[in-house]
Length: 433
View 1 (spheres, rainbow, N blue to C red):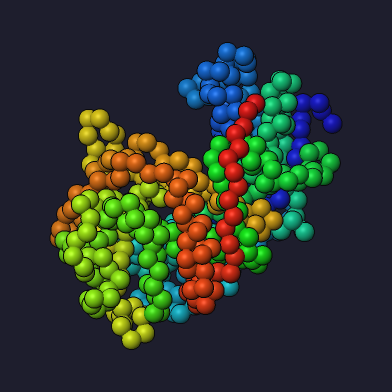
View 2: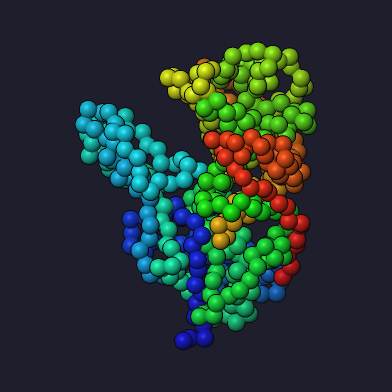
């Protein structure tokens, strides 16, 4: 064995959404992992300038800071793959209708990127090709019958020492691939060379993570589904089959005296009011105004380019009625002082380790605050600003109490978002090199 080649074994904790899913041996890509690892090491020193003062010879010459080592991933075994592409192809009929075929191994509903417009495809073959070009699948290598190896080639002993020192924490604090902040693409280090590693993930995260974080205790057999439910309750809310939970981000901001963009859009008839108006209405826009300011509050948890709302539900059973949804396009109004914001990923990252959910909330990026966004349903336009400030730690502590106490009984009885667990907080750590 060369003294310059260092080998690790990884455990795949959750499915990885991969655009090269059909290729044999598809797994983590060094082109994604290495830049993130380089950035992680740099952060432990307080920034690129601090590293260069001490170890400028670690860096490759170029526009982006990158260290002088190479990385590759090798996998042995046969992965379990989702089958959404083949299922979608089976649904297509020559007359344009669709069969009701369900995938045997679906992707968790937290990923909804497998969509493609087939209107301009004239034949089933053209539709098949469009689906295969656009859709992604998940791959998952079980730890019991597969081996995932990572090899690093490094000729600088001091640099390799740093990589060895931080590699466990790096994988504990990062996911990979598409939709990684919702738990997809979670991996952990199990071996260095052939030596099995024993460590406490929570203790290591405490050492490195600069903010309070949270651990979900639920003994769940499907933690990915728990993440879907918890994030839905946090950002979107639930209004389905007679069950209603207002999005917690709205509840939280209401208590701060700030209305939300959804209520404002209902006032301006951009989106419909679903349900019958009454004195007990769940919709704040049905009642006398009580907020001086309405803000785009969901932006604090991530920004996309559109959002959809139900047009109506059956008041007797709470189910959607024919008529589809109203889609509202969202765009940032750039200015001389602010560059255009196309998208903003959620600052809350869900990590799964041994089927245990760890919630890593990062502070909202300052460039998101007090920004003007346009909401457009192709008939009406509305300008709404984002909040001027958002305390993520306070928000997460309040959300913990909301889940653990305020709606605990409803969640236990719920059919749509049944959840028996609780969320516990872990105190702030703080890493140092």
